[in-house]
Image (cartoon, rainbow, N blue to C red; front, side, top):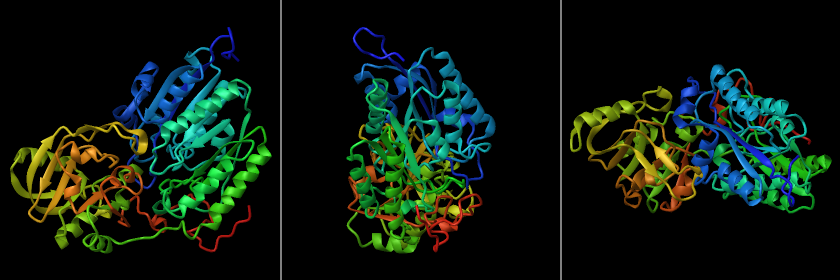
Length: 503
């Protein structure tokens, strides 16, 4: 092991990332092209991409530099949330990653960024699989330390293959860079011999509803407070709440806890169990509240605007198609507005471009993937604007994204006060620049529809005094009992409401 002490050589730490949230209820598969279109980088291109991003990889880079450790960027791949990864694509990604490690020369450690909810068709626990292969390649002595998205479904394989994992503490995720810095600090102190991180997890038989997963709202806020207290205990290096990702039908699906201590695995397990018991005690409050489309629109009409309606069943950040129309139909039916909805519909964008700015026609919009997300919306619209759909975000937002490209974009308006933004590429509503970059003023709308659950809050809280989560139908429906699970654990709360557990 090479460490920076006096005249000794500088330690070298490799950086790896493979990030994708896999919705197994979608009929489509994630291919290698999905990664190529989003992010697939090796070597120094990783450093260039993430040097200015609000992301854990930037935290890795900056944290190692501050510690006097050479950062060796090796591999980074990310794809938009979609279906499970095709077997051939997953094997190609892993072989590329591992080949970069083989070619890197001497390394003293690895900083890794799995997502935690990645599923490959041939490996349901895809994160556990690639971390295990990485451990097999570098051997048992090299420290492997990393970050997780708390929307991951933590597996024993992930825990066994690594020395320490820390999840983001906030949802919306606005602390990714900080967690990257935290992981880099753990790595630095491990290489210097100051810490010997060991970790343990606990898996209560429950799934926290995604509607209840905002860390600044009760009861999740109180639960995260328990983790804050544990982090302050002597001998504790880290404590992570894994909220879970309900849209992956895998054995690991569910909420869990993870604690890292300095050399005391039994203590880590004790604390992980205690935190799991706190979560279990709050399970009824974490089961979710479900507001119908009709009630949500009715409430929004009487609240100070803008009111953000979160379209949970068409959550683009959870893999949904982004072409859902349930709320748009209700807005048209009631005439409540002015209102804004973004719909991914490349075909309608082409039709709008043929009409040109100022053109008016009866159009059929959205609902193209299936009827689950609502029927196509038919109404007369005028094309207000056409653009390339690119915009930048300078603020810290969910996911650490700074550059967005939603493809060719059309903004339509109708005489009932409904504005629809049509995009050619699915784009999650993580930034208000999605509106303001194209001359739309959020504060002028009574209702803003955002296709998400908690992720949009980091942006929309700035302009919306009221936010309502709407239980729309779709592949990301908030009511988990509506999803056709085949592989989840049983019994499990809230599916089997009488489930008991003694940790």
